[in-house]
Length: 266
Image (cartoon, rainbow, N blue to C red):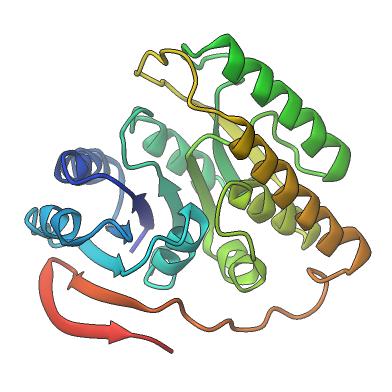
């Protein structure tokens, strides 16, 4: 198994089947064995059924009974990842999946611990609102001040890692929501996995306005300061990684086969 891709999904009943097929087409052409792991983040039975209906032999589907946030969905999916490389990819397909073979080629060189999609990479093709640009610039200034993360854009939903990094970092991540990406990268850098390469992305949706509101900004700011506190004051990320209790979930499909009542609660 060369690569495992975790796809967290919320409100995705209408598009998740298309996403799984599109990712499978790309991975068929570039990977020597792969998994697509869909994690429905409290999205209900319709989304789970839509994903399972694809029935691809490389597909696993996880059902979180309650909405936990993107971070918790990704971490839960990573528990089932068998690949030499492990990544996560936004389910809505705003990001073109051609970033995956580019990231895989970079990881194969052995020169990088992480490859992250970046809107600021010079070959990226992105259109998004002025409000989002201002927000992204301001957040990256905060990240640069607080953490030694060698990336100019930490928030694109396409990130890929060496397995060793994933296994070291996952037990230490605490953020479930908005600041999950930066905590993951900051902890990785703190623990010696700081070789990051940015890959160009094509974001095909034309952002009309911005869905960012003061609540989103405040939660991102609060969570990011929480990461800094745990890192620089409490030194919580410096010790041995410990196993954390699993988030209760249901395994609906494993490797393309439906699973009945496979409830994981420990």
